[in-house]
Amino acid sequence: DVSRHLIHGAMRFGPTSAVVLAVFACCLFGLCESVLLDGGLTSACTYYGPANVSAGRNWTGWGTSYTKGLRTAQLVCCTMLAVYAIPLSATFLHRTLPVWKCKLHTQYLWMAVSVLILVLQFLYVLVSDTIDKDSKPNYGWSNIPWYAYVIAVIWIPILVLLNEGAKMIYKKRFTLLQKRARLLFDTKLGMHSPV
Figure 1: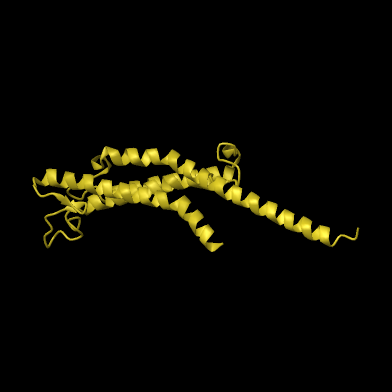
Figure 2 (figure 1 turned 60 degrees about the vertical axis):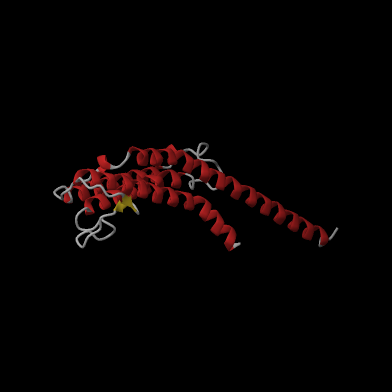
């Protein structure tokens, strides 16, 4: 029974984790190209970082010289996780009903927490960017490649559909277990009936 729950959890959370990691790699690759263009460097981006690693550039080239780029990629992924938490949690509001049949506008606590998550994430990004605004070179959200944003936005409806599919599998399994329990109960009751 534990393996079934692990598979169910992997179906719900695994693909989202993979998409966030893929977008992180896209961000690093795009920022690496910006680093090479701005620095007039000709080396290629290897392992999603500048290939010319010297003593002052640890972390595969993202160290002391280009930490703003690495932090920007991390902020993008943190924001993605915060935004993905909202549709993901919407699929958990009802155990068996699909999200489009569940009345989200009546779930006041869920709506309040969703808005709070977005506001706190916005403040976190604002404070982080304000602290790092003087760092040179200043690689910001505009240096993130467009395809990273496209992947991040397209994943939201796919995330909802995947979780609804997992919910349907769970519902079928739950209905089957209920029917078995009912049959077992009726059979035992019939065997021990005084009639």
